[in-house]
Length: 610
Ligand code: AGP
Image (tube, rainbow, N blue to C red; front, top):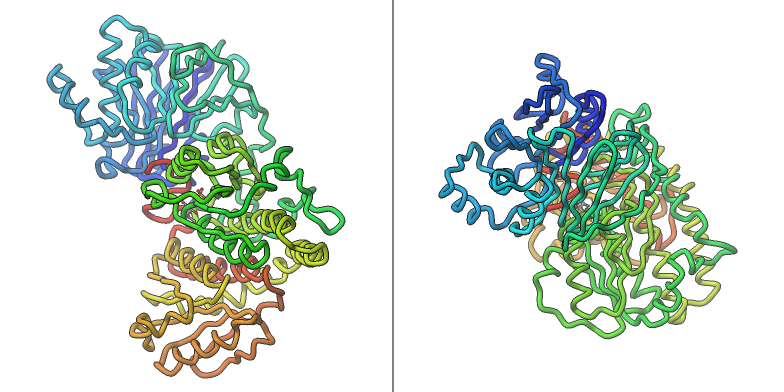
């Protein structure tokens, strides 16, 4: 999604803004731009319908000097990716603005502005915002008041950075629904869509709340809430360092993140288990009293995080004995539903800024769920601030658009939750010890499965020229197949669909032929024999099988069947392990296809619009 960077400093800010944009590239975008107030108060702007590298080249040809500026990477919503739609948008050479979000009443505002004589140079919803600020500013208001009046007229979501030629030492920031942080420097201040963008210049941040408007100068930051009351927001010191978002010798962020899963899982468990049991306080000081009241669970999330929820449902019902439903957030938020009493609403999100998941949490609070719990990877994100209980996944920054370590650490936290709830509903101490031992064995087992990378690469060579594929799993391995298929389509652009293997004969089997490879995950569990029968159905129709299997599963290499053995792993934790070869498989196929691994086309890391 769109990325924003801004600065008001004593030094030239062009390179700071450019570095910030580079560090936001992972969010996904299609065009980029920067606007800087020159020392003689001219508003200078450079935009490109392409990557930040092209913007850098353009700035090398046409250097912009000045100490107040804003910059942007655009992920198209209203209007195609193009030079004229790229931000910053400028009104009459006076005011420049960058925006992340969607303005829902842009047509109405556009009509009013046309009547006032404003001209439009883009197809964006954003241009009405800069015009509106200009309109209020020419009515005698200063920039802060003009932005305050403007945002009061906007419907929809926004994070904004605004500068004006007539107030060159001032940067106004505002947010509602889209993320924005202020970076606190010494004699200089910054804004950005996330902290990564600003780590080279500061580790001190103020996280704006929904409805906040900030008046930022070199010397001061003054924040107003949505009712225009001046308000204090705490300064938080980030533990992240500037190199947190670097590849550390790996070819891609995604590969680095896949290989960091053993460490990420170990850190997620750190301090949360002791003497073979889950430490209840790890879920927060109020966790015990909240969990005591819970008799059912509703999980809501999007994409990969949704798949984690689907796996947790198997665990929740089998281990904790509690009814559990799982739903994609974009559906949940618009559905009339029956809320069971004593239900815990669980939201899962790597970024904590996914618009649909956030809206679902807000909706859940209105609809009378007993309590809410968020599982998240980004501290101080909107989701963590709005949920009653919060458990962090501690995966560390995830830069690749395709989520990997966030998923496996979400599963770890979900298992901890299942155990805590299970304890209250008949899970015995011995069973808890056994589950905790499985969790503790994960880093070692993940390391072992990562050693298969070269073999998986060889397997991937047979896939790079395919256009369609099916993924199969059964039980809690069905969502693993869904996650594997999502990874493949996201980064290799091969069409992949997942099915519970038993469902194949009810339709999808018609697709199977020599040119439709079928990938399956086959741990040695109670459903193994059923799965093997389903695989026979595929072979009998000439389908080629690629099976990630337990060595004891009895699935052998044979004509049309290629098996890759995965070290033995017990139920119920098998989904965590079987996810990893599918991540590596998608990665190697995509590399062979020459795809843009970390920033796949059309996708964004943090989906902050609906
Ligand atoms: C995963 O590979 C995807 N890029 C995507 O499905 C993602 O999981 C989804 O957008 C939800 O994001 P979140 O976890 O940050 O809420």
